[in-house]
Image 1 (cartoon, rainbow, N blue to C red):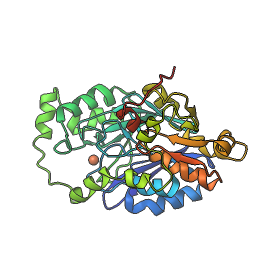
Image 2 (cartoon, rainbow, N blue to C red):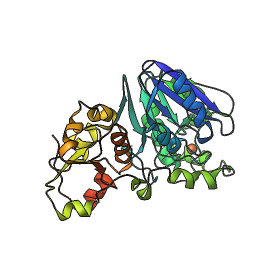
Image 3 (cartoon, rainbow, N blue to C red):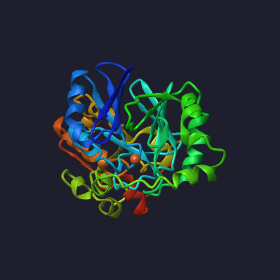
Length: 344
Ligand SMILES: [Fe+2]
């Protein structure tokens, strides 16, 4: 496995790069906007294809590189389902698995620092965001933070992981790089409490100043997604248009979401599946979509229209001309009351 812990000096943020092999797919956790070129250079040097980027939560102390990385690499942006960010490609919920080639992460909803904070467990290590820090815990006094929820996230979730699990936080201000669950249980001063009330008492009396970047970072991080205007930079067919002439006679609907999303939410009836991660293979000259597009309009959809915008661009670069997408994706389809088929 390739594993890199990258440090941002200004915000003391750790960003993690994960991949199973040189030449394969990669994932980044909590990337910082100002370091985007550094990540892209490293990905190139290690011959990696960035396919997913996770933000563990809406950061208040730095702007995320998620949007810039998506624009540069067409990677999938990932956050928890509770995230207030307006457009996120893929939303995970508690205990969902998130995969890239050769690696699987389990999403753990660990609210408290913020209501949408997630940790991600991968084999012998856990990426704890700002929930559990080395000898500390993330503050709980803004962004729907709640010390009682954090107490639960810590004591009922993270500290129940095996003692030798490596702890990789999103920040460290002293230069520590890694810890373990056992070490934090024994030596983290915030965890030496007997009750949630005692924990809340500590957290409610920290009296910390707001992060310097907060007023800039939070609003920026809420709108990194490809919103409606951006989704119209490629050919579209609106939900209303499709429903006015349903069932669609002269178009083929193509679902580019992951199998887990299809099983969870259902799909538009009669759509075929061409997952975004393999989309270029489906569009190459011998791929199934290339054949269909010769005679029929291909209509792509994903969860919210972000991946499908990028997919129309990929299709067009590969020479497919008859491809459009549904702005707002399956979410807009459901909102409009479009028919949904359950996927077994
Ligand atoms: Fe944070």
